[in-house]
Image (cartoon, rainbow, N blue to C red; front, side, top):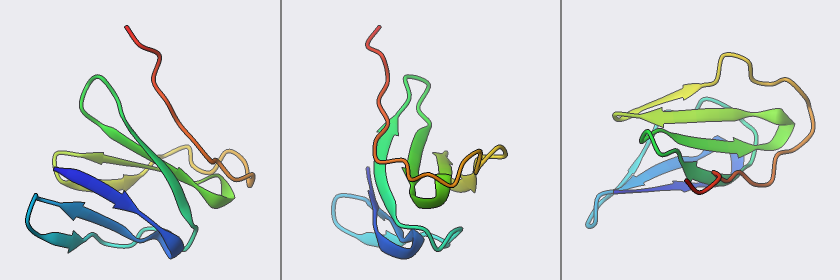
Length: 79
């Protein structure tokens, strides 16, 4: 399974054979996706947006946005 992010809040899942568009939760451009060790994907983008993807559900992080600055990347510290 893979996630793809793009312009105007577009999010897609890839099953290995099919692309499926998810519900759009923002109009901001999305720039980076990172999977946490716990299995949740975090998606960051313009206007300080942070989305999460867990068990097939895309959600806006409750504290988002804490800034209007654009987030261009996200990474997890190796354990």
